[in-house]
Image (cartoon, rainbow, N blue to C red; front, top):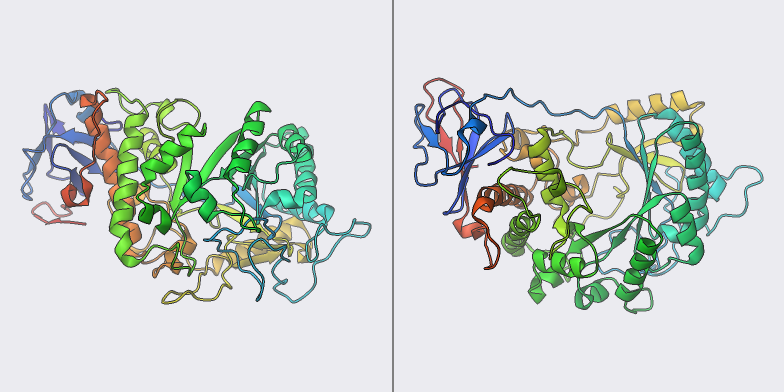
Length: 531
């Protein structure tokens, strides 16, 4: 029933003797045995669960093909990233919106919605432009040709890069830079290099010129939309306090009609929770706007108590994301054949709710039996090129003041000053040396190594630090969120053979959901402990 099943078994029984690591996830009606070392998962009979002895066994759930559990699978080793695949081009820090949860560091006295200069160059030197460059598009920003020259040096230094993401601020406020870099990318494409372009936008600055540029250079656009107008317009007004959702949706419509690829990302905040809007409600609203796939994340701690989650909020937030994960699996129209390509690919199905990207990632891990040690797209998965001509590990600024009761974010670390390297090869060596001195940002700490859901976990490294932890010791509420969402996905897969639609379904809630570890490193061990 579940993909990738394959554990020691005899007929309809799974023998636990000799299995080093596993967990049984249960919500009362359904139970799933998951084996982290092999990424194997199989539905089991919830009324006949093991009792922690080395000769315990699991009984396959009725309706599960015993053939799925007949072949022992070899352990799946995680992929290790050694060179960046993504370049984040942080083309401007200016933005025309005044989002209530904005985390961009701004000069003293500046306000969201104001035109802002870039952060000072770490060395104190002014931003430099090449001879003959036109004037910068805004004070403190590099000219388009200067930024494109930096990008070219980075692409030459790192042939592993296959994608560039335009980021900000609002990138369309620096359209000249976007154009210059896109034209550079076309040169590389004509030379045979595969490079994809994406752009993150609030959707309010899509002029005919910008639309033509994006379509011509095949730039995929991700719009930031936080759900229904009652919440989006409250959280994401423009610099004059005006609503922005209608403009963002008009941009989405223009992009679709022009043949561009359009996706959506949303931030789930305390106002969502207080208003009673669940993550599923957000996904339903996004589906009504024409989106079938969405990235939804809890708000990154900003220091603004009006939008940040408080410690007591996290159980409800976890419940909301887990229920959305359950709903998202069922909305994907799966069947007893297991996870299909349509369940992990955007744009492949239509349903009453936009499918949750964190669910698709988990389904992909199960289907392909592959995972990696990286928490997120921090170095070495990606590098960020800022308007000061420097490469950083991440676009979040480690120089931000500490939030009340929280440590300073340390995600943004300087890797190199692009112009100061004598050649692309020297740039690559300089970056490698700087990166080697940085603390690990991978799932290798003891807390992660012992977590049964490690293969599925993706966390923003800056979030781990800003919310009271670190990559070595993640905050407990974020671990619980990742584990509960994973459990909900596994249980939903066990549930689908009985699903016929109609009545509302529930993943069980945090009160009804349990997971029990079984770990037997020694032949006579009888350890059984909850995570």
